[in-house]
Amino acid sequence: MSVNEANVYKGASSSASSPPVAASPARLTQKWPARLRLLKVLLCLGAPLAVMLAPLPYSHAATVAMAISAFMIMAWITEVMEYAAAGLIGLMLFWLFNVAKPAVIFSGFVNDASWFYLGAMLLGAMVSKSGLPQRIANWVISHVGVTYSRLLLGLIIIDFLLTFIVPSGAACIVIMALIAMGLMKLFNVERGSNIGRGMFLVITYTTSIFNKMIIAGTASIIARAIISKAGHVDVSWGIWFAAFLPVSILTILASWWLTLKLFPPEAASLAGREEEFRSHFRVKTPWTPMAIKSAVLSALALVLWMTDSLHHVSASIVALAIGLFALLPYIDVLDEKDFRQVNLLPLFFVGAALGMGEVLKVTGALAALTDGFMGAITPLLTSNVSAVSTLYWGGFLYHFATASEVSMLATSMPILMEFSKTHALNPAWVGMIWSFSSGGKLFAYQSAVLVLGYSYGYFRPIDLFKMGAILTLVEFLLLALSVIFYWPMLGIMAH
Image 1 (cartoon, helix red, strand yellow):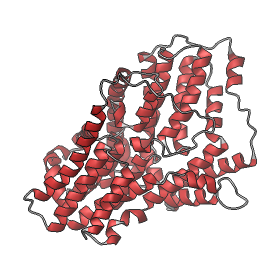
Image 2 (image 1 turned 90 degrees about the horizontal axis):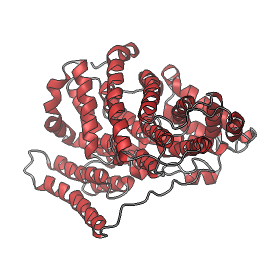
Image 3 (image 1 turned 90 degrees about the vertical axis):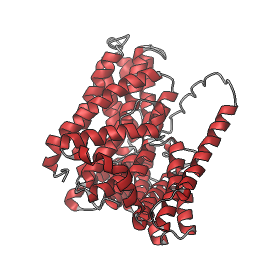
Image 4 (image 1 turned 120 degrees about the vertical axis):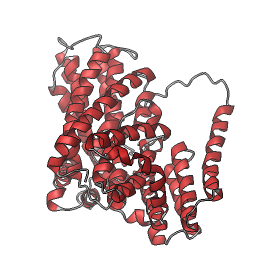
């Protein structure tokens, strides 16, 4: 998720307060931000100019398509402006210079990924308005026990469960932060304690990982859309979930064990304070008709998503249908105010990114880019083991150059899909591995979720680096084992 997506889901919790603004470093000068922005603008303008002036052996349409795409890619990487705005400007330029037909340029907006996003946002607003995420969290916390070890495991499990019904990592962090701060108060520890550092770090990092294993956030939505649009292979919601389920379960256990080792708690248990603990997390809000209807609709959506490979009803249709059904008279789970509050900017970004890929394909620019940038890795894809290693660590390293996982996927996935088709590789296999590689991170700038979690001020950059380095390696090993031994059982193979 990009920094621009940090506020993609409004109303995560009616009682959730905004995170405290982290104290900025001493202001040595006010000139650097302005100079940095100017540098970003120059890069965004210089990249397309360099493409146009270079003696490239391609058609005029392909060269112009590359130049405009260079502007869009640089704007996304540098985050010089909002992602959706940069994408729409790029589409407008394609249209202005007659690079392709409007039906091609704006084809991303008729892709079901855009409508899946809208439906997911409506579902998220519905479950949040009903208080369902808080009910789930309170129930889990109240039943795991009163030791720090069990409570920490409970937090990670809650984080995983919320991914299904809260389609935004930022919203998950806000909800999880409230629970973590409540536990810190019961343990009577302050900011800077191992308990606080461990809890906030693990919920922040796992949130950024879980929404790659489940089609929930913008990153996984756009990855699946590009696999379908550019790779011409459909990956159902249920198959995606099943493919990463073993990794999800083992990630929960690995992150729990690692947090206990890196941040041993100051207090091991709340023994003797059980009643205070239960009182704090007891659900006091009764089940209203709206809450019941919201829970039923959410459960229906999850069941239909998980079984979409059986009934073949698109996950996008399910999300949009149930989201709109909640707006109907006498259902009254959502109203026009909730609908107006849905942030549609990521929808425009997804449409623009898909449109860019289609324009590059139609003009022949995508094939040229594939030959130029991907030819060198062909010898490294001769076996499953080397292919998994190349794709995972290649994506991990490429992510350092981009400001977010969303820009990483939007700028690289179309080329990977074209490469897969021309080299007899399964685009779904390649795309799912590459998408998962965006979960490995070492620095907060790589994800808006990490930025938001860090802004609470409970962990340090070095804490994030240590946990990120270890979990990135663990995730690679888990993924490699799943891809080699488990994915073939689901019919997901390299060729």
